[in-house]
Length: 307
Image (cartoon, rainbow, N blue to C red; front, side, top):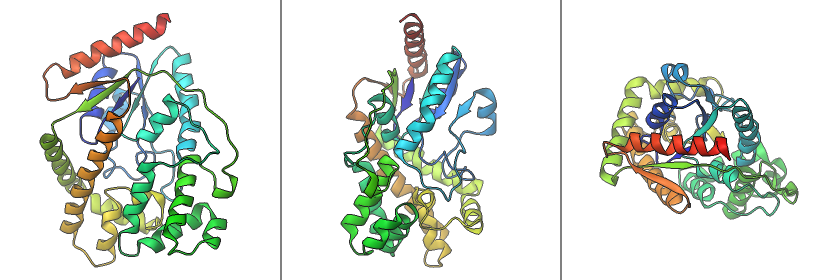
Protein backbone atom coordinates (compact mmCIF):
# COMPACT_ATOMS: atom_id res chain seq x y z
CA UNK A 1 0.00 0.00 0.00
CA UNK A 2 0.95 3.67 -0.22
CA UNK A 3 -0.06 6.93 1.42
CA UNK A 4 0.53 10.04 -0.68
CA UNK A 5 -0.41 13.69 -0.66
CA UNK A 6 1.03 17.14 -0.14
CA UNK A 7 3.35 17.97 2.71
CA UNK A 8 1.68 18.58 6.09
CA UNK A 9 -1.55 16.84 5.00
CA UNK A 10 -1.41 14.10 7.63
CA UNK A 11 0.43 11.24 5.88
CA UNK A 12 2.62 10.29 8.85
CA UNK A 13 -0.22 10.37 11.38
CA UNK A 14 -2.33 8.19 9.09
CA UNK A 15 0.50 5.70 8.62
CA UNK A 16 0.86 5.33 12.39
CA UNK A 17 -2.88 4.78 12.74
CA UNK A 18 -2.72 1.99 10.16
CA UNK A 19 0.30 0.47 11.91
CA UNK A 20 -1.83 -0.03 15.02
CA UNK A 21 -4.42 -2.02 13.06
CA UNK A 22 -2.39 -4.01 10.53
CA UNK A 23 1.02 -5.77 10.35
CA UNK A 24 2.48 -2.76 8.58
CA UNK A 25 6.12 -1.89 7.91
CA UNK A 26 6.56 1.68 6.70
CA UNK A 27 8.83 2.44 3.75
CA UNK A 28 9.88 6.08 3.46
CA UNK A 29 9.03 7.64 0.10
CA UNK A 30 10.55 11.07 0.72
CA UNK A 31 13.55 12.35 -1.22
CA UNK A 32 14.91 14.24 1.82
CA UNK A 33 14.26 11.82 4.69
CA UNK A 34 16.72 9.39 3.13
CA UNK A 35 19.56 11.67 4.28
CA UNK A 36 21.34 11.24 7.60
CA UNK A 37 21.40 14.22 9.93
CA UNK A 38 18.55 16.01 8.19
CA UNK A 39 15.83 15.40 10.71
CA UNK A 40 14.07 18.61 11.68
CA UNK A 41 13.74 20.17 8.23
CA UNK A 42 12.42 16.93 6.72
CA UNK A 43 9.84 16.27 9.47
CA UNK A 44 11.36 12.82 9.87
CA UNK A 45 9.46 10.27 11.99
CA UNK A 46 10.23 10.69 15.67
CA UNK A 47 12.13 8.08 17.73
CA UNK A 48 8.81 7.18 19.39
CA UNK A 49 7.16 6.59 16.00
CA UNK A 50 10.07 4.42 14.94
CA UNK A 51 9.65 2.33 18.08
CA UNK A 52 5.95 1.89 17.40
CA UNK A 53 6.37 0.82 13.76
CA UNK A 54 9.23 -0.52 11.67
CA UNK A 55 10.52 2.14 9.26
CA UNK A 56 12.69 1.54 6.18
CA UNK A 57 14.58 3.88 3.82
CA UNK A 58 15.36 6.49 6.46
CA UNK A 59 18.93 7.76 6.98
CA UNK A 60 20.36 5.60 4.18
CA UNK A 61 22.62 8.25 2.62
CA UNK A 62 25.19 10.78 3.75
CA UNK A 63 24.00 14.33 2.94
CA UNK A 64 26.97 14.77 0.60
CA UNK A 65 25.72 12.02 -1.74
CA UNK A 66 23.62 12.45 -4.87
CA UNK A 67 20.60 10.20 -5.36
CA UNK A 68 18.31 9.31 -8.26
CA UNK A 69 14.86 7.87 -8.81
CA UNK A 70 16.46 4.74 -10.21
CA UNK A 71 18.62 4.31 -7.13
CA UNK A 72 15.58 4.68 -4.90
CA UNK A 73 13.77 1.93 -6.80
CA UNK A 74 16.87 -0.28 -6.64
CA UNK A 75 16.92 0.04 -2.85
CA UNK A 76 13.18 -0.03 -2.19
CA UNK A 77 12.21 -3.01 -4.38
CA UNK A 78 14.04 -5.70 -2.38
CA UNK A 79 12.69 -4.20 0.85
CA UNK A 80 9.12 -4.42 -0.47
CA UNK A 81 9.65 -8.01 -1.58
CA UNK A 82 11.16 -8.97 1.78
CA UNK A 83 8.29 -7.44 3.76
CA UNK A 84 5.78 -9.34 1.63
CA UNK A 85 7.79 -12.56 1.95
CA UNK A 86 7.55 -12.28 5.74
CA UNK A 87 3.78 -12.02 5.54
CA UNK A 88 3.59 -8.35 6.41
CA UNK A 89 2.21 -5.31 4.57
CA UNK A 90 4.63 -2.74 3.11
CA UNK A 91 3.30 0.80 3.37
CA UNK A 92 5.01 3.45 1.28
CA UNK A 93 4.61 6.87 2.89
CA UNK A 94 5.71 10.17 1.38
CA UNK A 95 5.21 12.90 -1.14
CA UNK A 96 7.85 12.16 -3.78
CA UNK A 97 5.69 11.31 -6.76
CA UNK A 98 8.50 10.11 -8.99
CA UNK A 99 9.42 7.40 -6.49
CA UNK A 100 5.87 6.06 -6.50
CA UNK A 101 5.66 6.28 -10.29
CA UNK A 102 8.83 4.21 -10.64
CA UNK A 103 7.44 1.48 -8.39
CA UNK A 104 3.84 1.45 -9.63
CA UNK A 105 4.39 1.80 -13.37
CA UNK A 106 7.93 0.54 -13.67
CA UNK A 107 10.73 2.79 -14.83
CA UNK A 108 12.10 2.88 -18.34
CA UNK A 109 15.69 4.05 -18.49
CA UNK A 110 17.61 4.86 -21.59
CA UNK A 111 15.17 7.11 -23.41
CA UNK A 112 16.03 9.81 -20.84
CA UNK A 113 12.53 11.20 -20.80
CA UNK A 114 12.07 14.41 -18.88
CA UNK A 115 10.63 15.03 -15.46
CA UNK A 116 8.73 18.26 -15.00
CA UNK A 117 9.07 17.92 -11.22
CA UNK A 118 12.87 17.70 -11.32
CA UNK A 119 13.16 20.36 -14.02
CA UNK A 120 11.03 22.85 -12.09
CA UNK A 121 13.16 22.38 -8.98
CA UNK A 122 16.37 22.90 -10.93
CA UNK A 123 14.99 26.06 -12.54
CA UNK A 124 14.11 27.38 -9.09
CA UNK A 125 17.74 26.90 -8.07
CA UNK A 126 18.90 28.71 -11.21
CA UNK A 127 16.73 31.70 -10.28
CA UNK A 128 18.55 32.18 -6.98
CA UNK A 129 21.68 34.39 -6.66
CA UNK A 130 24.62 32.36 -7.92
CA UNK A 131 22.21 29.69 -9.11
CA UNK A 132 23.99 28.95 -12.39
CA UNK A 133 27.25 28.27 -10.57
CA UNK A 134 25.43 26.11 -8.00
CA UNK A 135 23.87 23.96 -10.72
CA UNK A 136 27.19 23.60 -12.51
CA UNK A 137 28.84 22.49 -9.26
CA UNK A 138 26.04 19.98 -8.72
CA UNK A 139 26.60 18.62 -12.22
CA UNK A 140 30.35 18.27 -11.65
CA UNK A 141 29.67 16.03 -8.66
CA UNK A 142 27.63 13.52 -10.70
CA UNK A 143 28.70 13.96 -14.33
CA UNK A 144 32.17 15.43 -14.65
CA UNK A 145 32.35 14.88 -18.41
CA UNK A 146 29.24 16.99 -19.02
CA UNK A 147 30.44 19.64 -16.58
CA UNK A 148 33.73 19.90 -18.50
CA UNK A 149 31.84 20.19 -21.78
CA UNK A 150 29.15 22.68 -20.69
CA UNK A 151 29.60 26.26 -19.54
CA UNK A 152 27.73 27.23 -16.39
CA UNK A 153 25.73 29.77 -18.42
CA UNK A 154 24.46 27.04 -20.77
CA UNK A 155 21.53 26.67 -18.43
CA UNK A 156 19.28 24.54 -20.62
CA UNK A 157 21.89 21.84 -21.20
CA UNK A 158 23.18 21.89 -17.62
CA UNK A 159 19.64 21.36 -16.32
CA UNK A 160 19.03 18.63 -18.88
CA UNK A 161 22.19 16.77 -17.82
CA UNK A 162 21.22 17.03 -14.14
CA UNK A 163 17.67 15.95 -14.95
CA UNK A 164 18.91 12.83 -16.73
CA UNK A 165 21.11 11.88 -13.80
CA UNK A 166 18.42 12.46 -11.17
CA UNK A 167 15.91 10.29 -13.03
CA UNK A 168 18.20 7.53 -14.31
CA UNK A 169 21.14 7.54 -11.91
CA UNK A 170 23.47 7.61 -14.90
CA UNK A 171 25.42 10.44 -16.53
CA UNK A 172 24.28 11.70 -19.91
CA UNK A 173 26.79 9.71 -21.95
CA UNK A 174 25.45 6.42 -20.52
CA UNK A 175 21.73 7.04 -20.76
CA UNK A 176 21.16 4.81 -23.79
CA UNK A 177 21.34 1.72 -21.59
CA UNK A 178 17.75 0.76 -20.85
CA UNK A 179 15.58 -1.73 -19.05
CA UNK A 180 12.12 -1.86 -17.59
CA UNK A 181 11.25 -2.71 -14.03
CA UNK A 182 8.33 -4.87 -13.06
CA UNK A 183 5.78 -2.55 -11.51
CA UNK A 184 4.07 -3.27 -8.18
CA UNK A 185 0.33 -3.25 -7.51
CA UNK A 186 -0.60 -0.82 -4.76
CA UNK A 187 -3.70 0.28 -2.93
CA UNK A 188 -3.11 4.02 -2.68
CA UNK A 189 -4.58 6.40 -0.11
CA UNK A 190 -4.31 10.15 -0.65
CA UNK A 191 -4.51 12.68 2.19
CA UNK A 192 -6.27 15.94 1.29
CA UNK A 193 -7.08 19.16 3.14
CA UNK A 194 -8.73 22.43 2.09
CA UNK A 195 -6.04 24.75 0.77
CA UNK A 196 -6.43 27.34 3.52
CA UNK A 197 -6.10 24.75 6.27
CA UNK A 198 -3.17 23.06 4.54
CA UNK A 199 -1.32 26.37 4.26
CA UNK A 200 -2.00 27.14 7.93
CA UNK A 201 -0.54 23.78 8.87
CA UNK A 202 2.51 24.40 6.70
CA UNK A 203 3.16 27.80 8.29
CA UNK A 204 2.76 26.33 11.77
CA UNK A 205 5.03 23.39 10.95
CA UNK A 206 7.83 25.72 9.83
CA UNK A 207 7.52 27.70 13.07
CA UNK A 208 7.73 24.46 15.02
CA UNK A 209 10.84 23.45 13.08
CA UNK A 210 12.46 26.75 13.97
CA UNK A 211 11.67 26.18 17.65
CA UNK A 212 13.14 22.67 17.44
CA UNK A 213 16.47 24.04 16.17
CA UNK A 214 16.34 23.96 12.37
CA UNK A 215 18.94 26.71 11.97
CA UNK A 216 21.32 24.84 14.28
CA UNK A 217 20.78 21.65 12.25
CA UNK A 218 21.67 23.43 8.99
CA UNK A 219 24.75 25.09 10.48
CA UNK A 220 25.88 21.71 11.80
CA UNK A 221 25.59 20.18 8.33
CA UNK A 222 27.77 22.92 6.87
CA UNK A 223 30.38 22.39 9.59
CA UNK A 224 30.43 18.71 8.60
CA UNK A 225 31.31 19.66 5.03
CA UNK A 226 27.90 19.59 3.36
CA UNK A 227 28.13 22.31 0.74
CA UNK A 228 25.44 24.42 -0.89
CA UNK A 229 25.97 22.53 -4.17
CA UNK A 230 25.03 19.13 -2.65
CA UNK A 231 21.73 17.69 -3.82
CA UNK A 232 20.51 17.40 -0.24
CA UNK A 233 20.95 21.13 0.33
CA UNK A 234 18.55 21.92 -2.52
CA UNK A 235 15.66 20.67 -0.39
CA UNK A 236 13.12 23.12 0.99
CA UNK A 237 14.00 23.96 4.58
CA UNK A 238 17.71 23.86 3.85
CA UNK A 239 18.49 25.90 0.74
CA UNK A 240 16.78 28.95 2.24
CA UNK A 241 19.44 29.13 4.96
CA UNK A 242 22.32 29.57 2.53
CA UNK A 243 21.81 33.38 2.29
CA UNK A 244 21.73 33.48 6.10
CA UNK A 245 25.05 31.66 6.32
CA UNK A 246 26.44 34.06 3.73
CA UNK A 247 25.29 37.01 5.82
CA UNK A 248 22.87 38.44 3.27
CA UNK A 249 19.56 37.40 4.88
CA UNK A 250 18.12 37.08 8.36
CA UNK A 251 16.79 33.90 10.01
CA UNK A 252 13.29 35.37 9.92
CA UNK A 253 13.58 35.97 6.17
CA UNK A 254 14.72 32.35 5.74
CA UNK A 255 11.72 31.03 7.67
CA UNK A 256 9.29 33.13 5.67
CA UNK A 257 10.88 31.88 2.45
CA UNK A 258 10.59 28.27 3.67
CA UNK A 259 6.89 28.80 4.34
CA UNK A 260 6.36 30.28 0.87
CA UNK A 261 8.39 27.60 -0.93
CA UNK A 262 6.65 24.83 1.00
CA UNK A 263 3.22 26.17 0.06
CA UNK A 264 4.25 26.28 -3.60
CA UNK A 265 5.65 22.76 -3.33
CA UNK A 266 2.43 21.49 -1.76
CA UNK A 267 0.48 22.95 -4.67
CA UNK A 268 2.70 21.09 -7.14
CA UNK A 269 2.29 17.87 -5.15
CA UNK A 270 -1.49 18.21 -5.22
CA UNK A 271 -1.40 18.65 -9.00
CA UNK A 272 0.93 15.68 -9.46
CA UNK A 273 -1.08 13.22 -7.39
CA UNK A 274 -4.46 14.41 -8.69
CA UNK A 275 -3.27 13.40 -12.15
CA UNK A 276 -2.59 9.84 -10.99
CA UNK A 277 -5.29 7.20 -11.29
CA UNK A 278 -6.57 4.84 -8.61
CA UNK A 279 -5.87 7.02 -5.57
CA UNK A 280 -8.52 6.74 -2.84
CA UNK A 281 -8.68 10.30 -1.50
CA UNK A 282 -9.48 11.11 2.12
CA UNK A 283 -10.63 14.47 3.44
CA UNK A 284 -8.50 14.61 6.58
CA UNK A 285 -10.83 17.22 8.07
CA UNK A 286 -13.60 14.66 8.29
CA UNK A 287 -13.96 12.81 11.59
CA UNK A 288 -14.25 9.43 9.85
CA UNK A 289 -11.14 9.82 7.64
CA UNK A 290 -9.01 7.47 9.74
CA UNK A 291 -11.72 4.82 10.01
CA UNK A 292 -12.27 4.95 6.24
CA UNK A 293 -8.54 4.51 5.69
CA UNK A 294 -8.42 1.53 8.04
CA UNK A 295 -11.39 -0.08 6.28
CA UNK A 296 -9.74 0.45 2.88
CA UNK A 297 -6.39 -0.92 4.10
CA UNK A 298 -7.92 -4.01 5.69
CA UNK A 299 -9.86 -4.77 2.51
CA UNK A 300 -6.72 -4.40 0.43
CA UNK A 301 -4.75 -6.55 2.85
CA UNK A 302 -7.30 -9.34 2.82
CA UNK A 303 -7.55 -9.18 -0.97
CA UNK A 304 -3.80 -9.35 -1.45
CA UNK A 305 -3.54 -12.39 0.80
CA UNK A 306 -6.19 -14.34 -1.09
CA UNK A 307 -5.19 -13.34 -4.63
